[in-house]
Image (cartoon, rainbow, N blue to C red):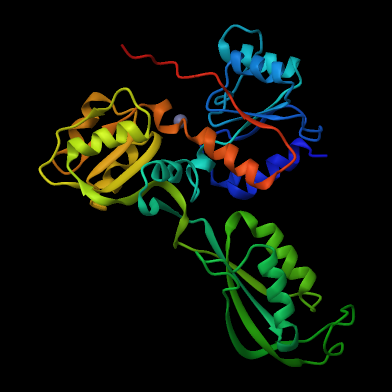
Length: 365
Ligand SMILES: [Zn+2]
């Protein structure tokens, strides 16, 4: 039996809610996550039609990329589509779950799916975030070092890229004097103690701090383990916005646009003046990505694929890059596939269906 919260826990291990942007509202929006799951419908947007689709399938969880509750709702009277959609979900007892900028910001998320569609080589995060990593330093009697480290690794510490169990260790002397109320692992009350300890250092994602400290406290033999937690300025290369990678072979700009159109199933591309060189390095960002144009230029991308540029912002291409605006829906529609693949890889016993409804509010003529 799978519960709705099992699906949520899995998704949040892949795209932690802590990685969403400040303005976002990812997470469970309606419903009771403790309920037994009857099936998952995956959509880009939530609309009343999508809620009806889930109901007709008999499914009680809809996973959407865009959160329908984005700003505060002050009343639920059905006066607009947001209120009506939320009311309908609650009436039908359907959980609405949004996985938005946290899925944008992880490796193998929304933007890496675009890279996959374009068969880009060596995809990397275009603008890695800083301030997400922390370091734990603690001091452990030599004999207990391996045990403490292994429990820290289990809790999520010590991972750097393709490497796990990363630590630094240095032997030194720890000193302390227990008082009469202490229950020391080593030493006696009111007698100064000198112990050979290993200073251990491990890096960890900041949002795991509580479980890392708990792992330290439960595995460390001391009553009062000494430790420091430092916030690091380092970039976290696994987390951030956009993607950059390379085409297998450089293409003429016109040929590339045709390729882009085919691979992303587009009817329209809006693009800036084509440059004389070939296209080899490609940057992309699903959804509104204008804030990443400078990163794409800095990293010498030949083209930046995204959406929602305004008229004056196209001028910022400035002969340095080609901006290709492919539409918000079109740039993110394969996110549905991504969510579906993730769930199917991890759960074998649940129904996961892509919504058949095209929720794009824009048509072209
Ligand atoms: Zn979007």
